[in-house]
Amino acid sequence: MADQTPIESGLALRRGDFPVLTDALDYAAQGATGLNFYCPNGVLQTRLTYARLRAEAMAMAQQLVGFAPKNALIGLVAETSVAFARAFYACQYAGLVAVPVPMPAAMGGRESYIHQLRQMLGGTKVEALLAPERLTEMAEEALGPIDVPVFNMADPVFPDGAMGEQTELRPFGPDDLCYIQYSSGSTNDPKGVIGSQASVTANCEAIIKHGLQVRAGDRAVSWLPLYHDMGLIGFFVAPMMSQMSVDLLAPSSFARRPLTWLTLISENRGTLSYSPTFGYELCVRRWRNDRMLDLSSWRAAGIGGDMVRGDALDAFFETFKDHGFSKTAFVPSYGMAEATLALAFAPLGEGAVSDEIDNDRLRRSGEAVPACDITQMAARRTFMLCGKVLPGHELEVRGQDGKALADRKVGDICVRGPSITPGYYQNEEATRGSLTSDGWLLTGDLGYMLNGQIVITGRSKDLILAHGRNIWPQDLEWAVEGAVSGRIGRTAAFPVTNETGVDEIVLLVECRSRKPENLSRLHAEATAAARLAANSPVHVGLVPLSSLIVTSSGKISRARARQKYVGGGFEDLAAAAFAAKNGNRSASGLSDAR
Image (cartoon, rainbow, N blue to C red):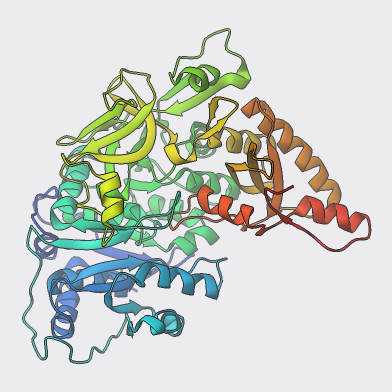
């Protein structure tokens, strides 16, 4: 197998100043860099230069132009592979709108994936779905009822379609679309976020020039999924727009062997790599000090996609500081699919900066007052500063009256700028609800400003109102995770209304053990930690591992967890253990009707 593509392209560095993606690939193809696909054990599987990618994409595009009219939609199962890369850029040269969809979840099952594909593509009117050969049968079962043909992504044979024998390429222009990405669905059903050529190129240029300040000698390493904006834009499109080589590991490979990610950074001298917080946590849990690493080249260790947890970053630094990792490499960031990807980056070279506040004051007044000597430990809460908004963009934290708030006042985060989506595909109601007439995106996030930087406190739809106070679900989840570390999986907190009409707080905890004595102790400790964090009664339910619902980006979907809970869809491990102990083998389901 040939060596990976080099760090240096041999071209003059252009930092994303291209009007369309095809222009960027045309330029990158003149150099020596490209994409490198790795096996779970870190062995290079395929080396794909940008020159080869361009040639193969253009050849595939010549088939596609005869199959579907310009601006038609083509679904792509976003496997981390040469086939997906070729198909995505073939759509760009053919003037077709790519619709990346997820791979099946490791624990999701066949029926769940079939339902997911139908939900995403049933109303999208795609002309076809391209999928890995091993998934074509499942995809055909999912899309057969809505008459969408499925092709093997690696070797598609397209019949003559609406355009007959036409083969002339028709690449997108600056005013055209680029792709449709389904949002992660952390608070509701996924929506198709429209990415235009203008919004994508604007965001990539801002990331390259200002957010990460890409320079000669940079190399990217990523395990992030290509159906999510962090992976698709951050480590697939933006590197190409700066002629950068990328080392790619499939998300499933990372889940099995997370330390391969660090090994690739070490061996290939990677400088730029991102992960949600849980990725850093997973590396710490799996570390056995059984390999040599040199992470000194890693200048920007980004955190995005979920709430940034300072304790997890501290643990990562303590674990890998003797292997060259610098604490100043951490780059907390803020963004979302509706902004293409990124909105704000913490200043490079400063590391993760925290702000410890009095959480009781925050709940009562909505103001992030700094903690002081008399603030009790249980009332202290630490947030991370996520940087200044990218140049050319605007960000405001607004109160209920719509006016911008002063520093440390928590309100709704609103953004505006060239990276913002034109809207949601065929969903005018959602578009009207999220975009104002003067171009402001209502993000649905809450936060506060501090010294010009944005601090994220949570999602407005996740906020729990209990006994006249605002309670952040993360407070309860993190408190329990800290109290019973190592014995649980994911957690999810949300409000419910019980049979008597009273609002209650529910916290579901995935358990690693099913032994009655372990469950009894775990339930008591989790309940005590949750009630202390909430200063309010909390109903703790113990559920099996992998039973909580996650989004395509790996975040817990509290809205879907609540829906499943209300419907009695969770196995109650505590009740099952009690029943088994007393000779009754039947187990009831958890629900809010207790």
